[in-house]
Image (cartoon, rainbow, N blue to C red; front, side):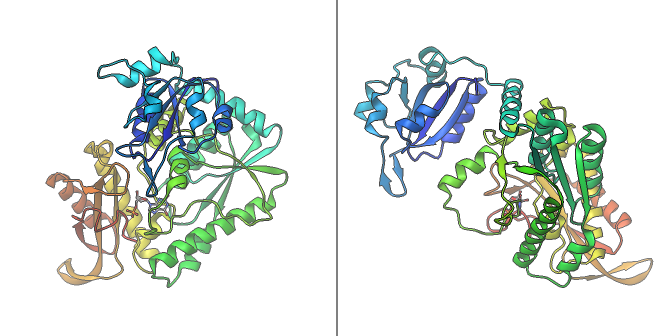
Length: 430
Ligand code: XMP
C-alpha cells in the first residue's frame, strides 16, 4: 500500500466506521484498529500519518474502561482524541479549532496526501496479488453477487487465466442470473469459468424439508460439497479467492450479536483442502466495492444490484420447496424488478423481492372456483440491515405489479404487500 493512512484506534465508540468513511471520502485512506494494538503491530502498518483516538462517551469496551498502551503516546505520530481525551493525549491533541477538525488534522497536522482513489487502489492490489500468487492458480466461487463479481474482475485483471471461477447453479438463482454470469465473465472478460448445473441435486436434497434453518443448512452444506468436488478435480490450485469486505473484518473482532439465522457463505471447506486466501477487497466498504467494480469495467446492473441472500430464492419459496412455487417466486420477482426499474424505485429502495407461502387460498378465475398460491411483495429500506422500514410504494405501481403477476404467473390468484418493519419481522421470511 503506497497510500497515506490515518489510523483510528477503537476505544469503544460505535462511530468509528463513520469516521473512517469520512476520512476516506476526503481521499485519504483510513483503517480502524483495536485499542490494544502494540507499538510493534502499529509499526508494521505502512505510511501511517496520524492516529485518532475514539472511545465515544466513556472509553468502555466489554464493560471495562480502556486506554491505549502508554508507550503508544510516546511515539512520534500526530494524535487526535475526538472523544473525551485523557490528560496524556491532551498534550498532543491537535488545537486546529472550528467545524472541520478532522480535515484540519488530516491535511494540516498530518500532512496526508489525498491519494486514496479506486484507480490507485486497483493498481496496488493488482501488484500485491501478482506478488502473492506468482505463477500459481486461484479458485473462486463466483455466485454473481457484487462481492464475488468484483473479486473476479480484480483477479482477472491481475492474473488472467490463472484464475479459475466456479459458478454453482443451485436452482435457487433469480431469473437470468446464471446466464448473466456466463455472459459477463466467460464471453466478455474471457475468464476460465466452470459452470456446474446442480439444480436437480439441490432440489432433491431439499424435497419435503420445511424447516427454515434446516433448509439453510442443506443449501450451505451442499454448496460446499459441490464446490469441494470441483476443487478436487482441478490440479495445482494453491489459493482461494474470497469476497471478504471491510465490515466483515471489523465485525468479526467485536461481534456480540446473537444468531437469528445461519448465514450462508463459502467457507468451511474440509481440512485437507488447504488454500491460502486471496482477499483483495478486505479493505473496502460496500460502496467502495461497487466503485471498484465500476472502475474494473463491470456492468452497472451487476455492481449496483440489491443484496441477495446466499440461499437464494430457497428462503423465499416458504416451507418445503416445490418446483411449481419456486417458478412462481422467480417469475414474480422478475416482474417486480422490471416494474421497480421502470418506476425508478430500483435506485431508491434498498431491497425488494417476492415470496410465495406454502398454502393456497380460494379465488375465482374464468368464472370458476380456483385454489391457488399467493405472492407477497416486500420492499424495505435500511442502513445496515439490522433494522428496516417498509417503502411506501405508490399505489399505481403496486396495482400494475399486481395485475401483471396475476396475469403472467401461473398458480397465483392473490397478491399481498408486507407492511412489517424489522423488528419484529426480519427482512427475509426464513
Ligand atoms: P434478515 O432476514 O436477517 O436479513 O433481516 C438481513 C439481510 O441479510 C440478507 N441475508 C443473507 N445474506 N447470506 C447472505 O449473504 C444469507 O444466508 C442471508 N440471509 C439473509 C437478507 O437478504 C437481508 O439483506
